[in-house]
Image (tube, rainbow, N blue to C red; front, side, top):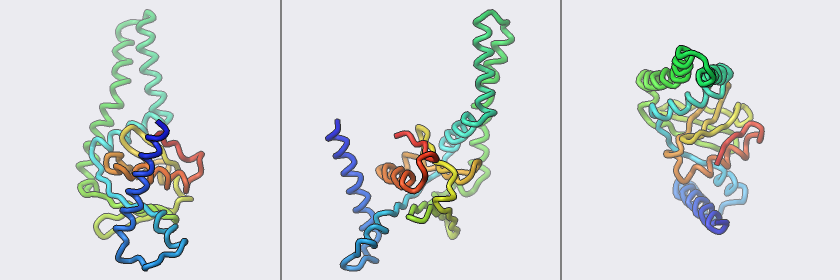
Length: 200
């Protein structure tokens, strides 16, 4: 298992380095200095497409890790437990409604936001460097320094880089593909460990 993991990491690293050299081969001098190679290798570029499913996954995580989401889920669960301990049928119905309400409303909200936001119709191009992260779409570019990032987390579908307590960049794992380990490495290298909660 250890050998297999090492081979996989080697191939990912080889793929990442090769893709960087391929993208930048026209701008590379014949001989790069150590500093130039370091700067070049510490850059990752990728495109992501935000879909309703990706938004829904993000909203579920954001809601159920907040105080209000946790309280609501706990209240619904306690009502269901209370029913099996002898409470009336109305308690069970109320518990089920509370447990189902948030997921259903978030499902509808994710679809509404997708349809209402033109930015979700086309891909977003991200670039991670030593300084921070930039995102561009059409002719617009925005950036944020690593030290200003709020936190980084993950779900089963995405890596989520919070730029504030309520705003985030979403990186679907299916779009990252083989670059996912490199993106995680960039985030983990440039943000304090206490801010990074990414599960492999």
